[in-house]
Structures are given as structure tokens and as C-alpha cells.
Image 1 (cartoon, one colour):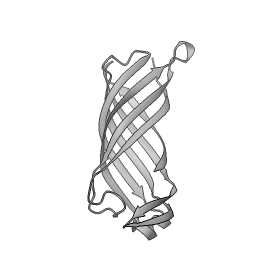
Image 2 (tube, rainbow, N blue to C red; image 1 turned 45 degrees about the horizontal axis):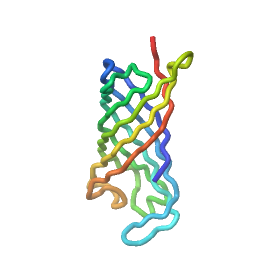
Image 3 (cartoon, rainbow, N blue to C red; image 1 turned 90 degrees about the vertical axis):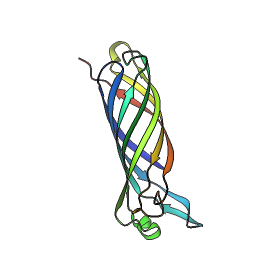
Length: 159
């Protein structure tokens, strides 16, 4: 578990399709974890950096006030060592993983004078591929799957 802070940009190819890029920094928090069949108390987890590119499809079109979409893409997830994670897990520098995601959501645009502003509600299933060079803490020998749910504000540049 961690808290991510990030942003993204979307380029609309046409009213039905867009390309999206994202980047987020995850602040590793102290937590209890089960590691090598024992519980480790209040350990600082590694910080993370995730980047990605996605294709976004708006089945009903993107020019609507409420525009639903489906999306999928690829990216990377990088774990960055902290003193505690180096001592306990053997993560000495950083380790990167190839990721894929699939999901969907809705963009809700405002009306009137604030029509460029809106909100986004999004759900993704994230798949992190294994990396044999990684620490046993995370995805060394098997793929990991997670869920991401977020709500955010958006601003659309319009001519």
C-alpha cells in the first residue's frame, strides 16, 4: 500500500479515440508486512514511480458532458530503495517492472463558464510482470496483480 501523486495528459485523435500518458510517484509508507514467513513490524516500504501510455476508447464519443470510456496500456513500475527496505528486503538501488493495465471509467465535464473543467472516475486492473533480478519482496518469480481506483480533477484545453 502507498499513496500516489501524479498527473497525465490526453491527446484526442478523434471523438472516439485518444492516447493518454501518465506518471505518478508513490510515497512508501511504514506498515507491517509478512516476509519470508515472518511478520516485520512498521517497515518503511520502497517509494515507487509509475509511468504509462494508454489507448482510450469512448464508445459514445468524447464530446458529451458525461463520457464513458474503456482503456488499456503498458508502462513501468520502479521501486526505489530506502534504508529500511535495503536492510530488510535487500533492495539496494531501484528495480523496474513492465506493467500492463485494463479498465474504464467516466469523465464528467462542467457546463457554462467552467466547461473546460471536470472530474474523472477511473478503475484499472494492473498487472506487474515478474523480474528475476528483483528482490523477493515483490514480483521476483511471479506476476502481481493489483487494483487502482481513483477520482481526479481534469482540465481540457479547447480552441
